[in-house]
Image 1 (tube, rainbow, N blue to C red):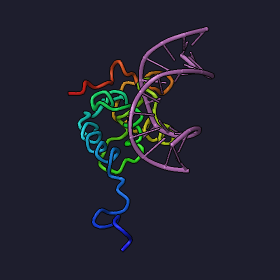
Image 2: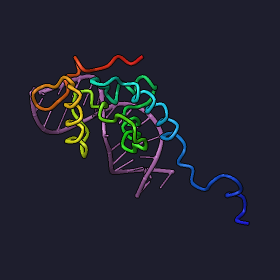
Image 3: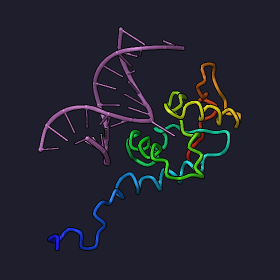
Length: 113
DNA sequence: AATTTGACGACCG
DNA sequence: TCGGTCGCCAAAT
């Protein structure tokens, strides 16, 4: 019985917000050309959500074939935790870098369609 | 139900 | 150029 509550809907639907948003975020991220980058804020603006929501989606990174390293902070900095790996991959794509290990956003930033 | 948190961003000194 | 503060917005405690 359990009263009405687990009648048909799976008890825990994390699918709401992040999940739906994730599809849109990943779609844009996959569209970023090699050698280019986008900021969390760029994606957020394009999707009409807060930059932190985009960051949260990226942190889950459920998609493997996703070029997550092409998403950096607006100041060209990389995310903590994957910073080393990200910088390595960006260099491998000849992304414009500035002294200090930060991406040169003025040159590498991609115009979202 | 209130508070804190977070792969962020814009401002300020 | 660098570091500290405030604002955002939804999810987690």
